[in-house]
Image 1 (spheres, rainbow, N blue to C red):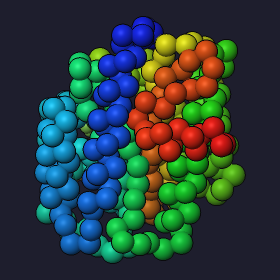
Image 2: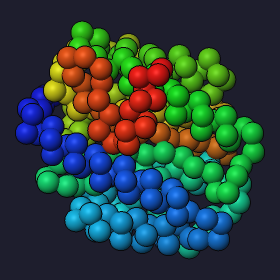
Image 3: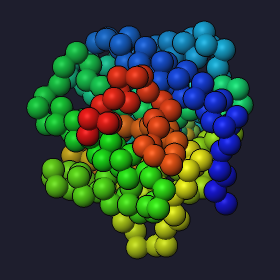
Image 4: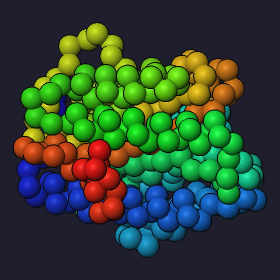
Length: 258
Ligand code: MF3
Ligand code: CO
Ligand code: CO
């Protein structure tokens, strides 16, 4: 069942989205060669707390960290460890915040200092595929229109989309209906309506789409060891343009610019 949000729900989700995006931005700016992913998680926890938010991930199905930190070939759900990030690594940071009882869910991949051309192209294509998907989040379209836009864009640029993990509705719960695959799965697909709040989140591999889970029970990695990137926004479907709830004004303008 898809839960439509009223104006009061949406106001709270705007606040939750703003907190999540502020934390994500601050964490991205803070990452520097030599810090451990545990250090990054602690910093994220302190930023979430400073806004009087709570991590939506800590304790979710016993998830042990405040944010997800996935390095290089790690796709999503990477755990904070004593690993030190190095110049040239790419790190996917996924932030989920509960604020005023609603959740903002947003992710991006950043280079630590700098990275090679392939990793940079992978990040660019993944981010742009997210905006391709968001542009389809309008009433009258179906979820599959989002999926198709992402998959088409990614594959056109020679990369592949992960099948095993998908985007989702989001609200008071982190994972609501509908599921939002990043590929066309041939299943029936719900129509989009104003008031839906969707976490759209392409996970894109430089090589093959196959993934596996490490023995820690959480960290998802590419089977072929090639890098992966992840970008995510929480988006409100409106009667007109989709509204990105997890972004600064600048990024909203970027959507309008195409
Ligand atoms: N944020 C992830 C998503 O975007 C979910 C993380 S669940 C956790 O859907 F338990 F790993 F935190
Ligand atoms: Co997320
Ligand atoms: Co999500």
